[in-house]
Image (tube, rainbow, N blue to C red; front, side, top):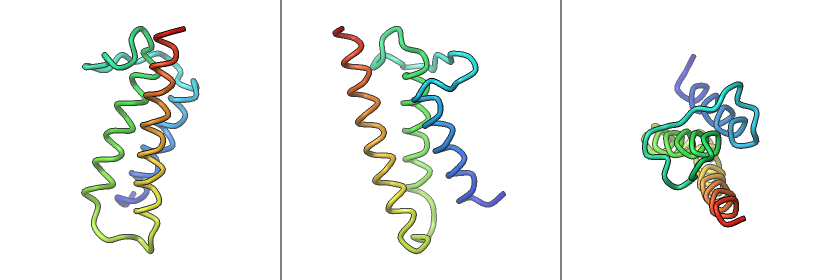
Length: 89
C-alpha cells in the first residue's frame, strides 16, 4: 500500500470514528479537549495524525494533497466545535 493510500485510509478511519462508527471507544492520551467523549477524542487525535502525515507527504498529488489538508483542517475544527458543544450542553 503506498503512502497516499495509507493517508486516505487514516482519513476515512478518522471520519468514521468522528461520526460514531467506532466499534469500541478509544481514549487517547491528552484527550482533554473532548471531556468524557472518548470517540470524539480519538477522532481528534486521528485527524491531527492525518494532518501531520499530509504535511510531511511528498509532492502535491495533482492538487489532491492540498484538498485533503484543507478537509482535514475543517474536520479538526468541526470535531473541536462538537466537543465544545457537548461539554456545555
